[in-house]
Image 1 (cartoon, rainbow, N blue to C red):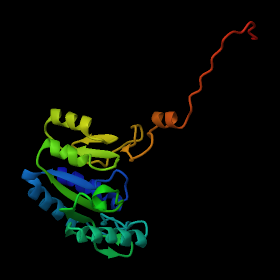
Image 2 (cartoon, rainbow, N blue to C red; image 1 turned 30 degrees about the horizontal axis):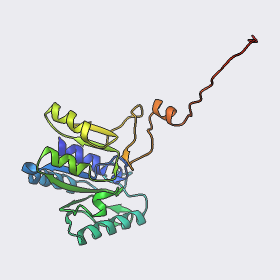
Image 3 (cartoon, one colour; image 1 turned 45 degrees about the vertical axis):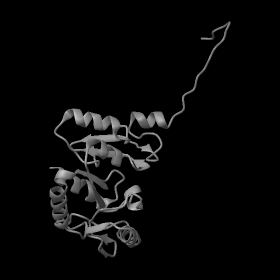
Image 4 (cartoon, rainbow, N blue to C red; image 1 turned 60 degrees about the vertical axis):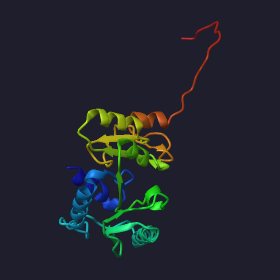
Length: 215
């Protein structure tokens, strides 16, 4: 279930989604099993014409965007990252890409790629997972997969993200939610009532004394 949710969250809309899944932290004891299943499922995705119902991943917005994404991945590989699949470009089509062993200083691990690119990172403890998750200046949504409610709620409290999805990927929202991020992730919140509050200004009126009231 976690693999399926993360693949969907990462590659829906060809990764051009501000709450798409980009970094996935995996417990070290299941890392290889998750990685292999994730890569296998990613390889099965069909890339092509979005008008074809058999297509899973359509094009990026322009060929230039696809080429720029490939350049970012090439840079990450040059800095030490390991390419597990993808990074193939045909016009505006960019194959879903999975990386591991990405250095912490690499921009593809620190900044939004806005493309079908995923970075896999193992963690050794709950505290390590929280520390790695928060080690970025941008954070809209996070997802946590666990069978323990106490861990889920503790993670939700500690994660520096505008929204935390329990047992789902980061790629979930509906319009009534207060939608926004932490740190440099955004300014303010969207979402019906919250948008009203963000887009209006409060005004205070103080009346000291009025001797006559005109009706």
